[in-house]
Image (cartoon, rainbow, N blue to C red; front, side, top):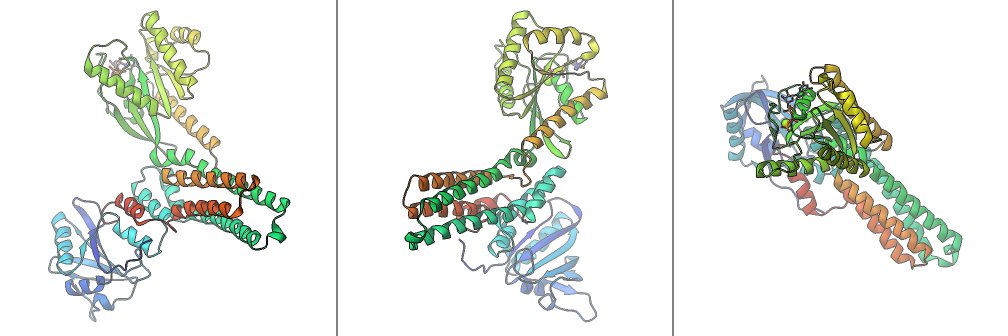
Length: 467
Ligand SMILES: Nc1nc2c(ncn2[C@@H]2O[C@H](COP(=O)(O)OP(=O)(O)OP(=O)(O)O)[C@@H](O)[C@H]2O)c(=O)[nH]1
Ligand SMILES: [Mg+2]
């Protein structure tokens, strides 16, 4: 853990780069008030120096002859970082912000590193690690579900659950201690059996929490939806219709799309990452097309849901059969695939559908024509269906949105399963206790109750400056 006392005062612009009406700079550390005393001239009739201001008060005045500002004062420990914090609300011109920042540096503050304010909040016990990660998620959130999940985590919903599980592990360890001290009283087969059962059931509860990653990942990172099909099937048109703008180039020339074209869409409050891909040409000698197909296949493999477009004119039977075989394989591998019969306005969909049903007996089919808004809506409904299915499959009330958390939970659950097996096989209990302690350590790494400085640095360096 980090024990070094924090002696320096850090400063940064906390609002985004570029010009804006207003901007906020943040200053935190033991010399924050002193720095402000040198630069801020309050307007009040009985003016108070920043060092004399009470916490949660503001003052209006001039800043180093540069701007008129509002200064907000937060006194330690009742601030975001737990230190003395001042926020300077100034005009949001790029040069003004820079000049105010320079003035702070000239009186002894230093530039904050990315995430350093949040890191100090963590070190000073204002929030735990999972809450700090939630702050970052909240800042990056694009969709309402992301906001909800991040805010629940920020409020400590996840930390509370984790601490409850850790407490249960400490209770198990205490029982082992008693058995080790008074073996004659406790070391009976029923007591040991109970201990093994409880360790196993704790492991199950922790594994159950890890399951929350199934939906949590989709909420935090977005649902990946890819569009596949032969060249000219209308893939780029479908993407453009779904996002409501001319994002991808559409032409009547097969092979128009080579790179992946990505767009963001919000469906039912979920972020959806939509990818249009190059048409799947089978026997091309063109290296650009070959690379496009390689990238397309990679995107298809990574997608949670695949829309596969088939449109007139259909290819020769051999080629169609190859395409059908490929679709069959993808479905068999467990991927959620929806077959889209494109260019429905050309009146051939019924015949194509009949043909396809000869090859594919169980496939979800939807018709699509670029002119019909209802068709676009129906495609979006398919995305909604997938999301509903995900919600049913993972209906945990606590979501795990970070891979780091999932891994820690899975590892802790594995330790407990192992501990239960060891108790049953008669292994000495002090070895079992070590395993339980290891599981508790893993849980503590989630909240940051026990975590090494390197990991803390890695996590906070992903923040931006000023956060
Ligand atoms: N009639 C009709 N034409 C369509 C429809 N959708 C797409 N097209 C036309 O089909 C042609 C190909 O459309 P794209 O969206 O570029 O097809 P693509 O699958 O992205 O093609 P590649 O990028 O070359 O693989 C264009 O001329 C479109 O205008 C549709 O629903 N009906
Ligand atoms: Mg295209």
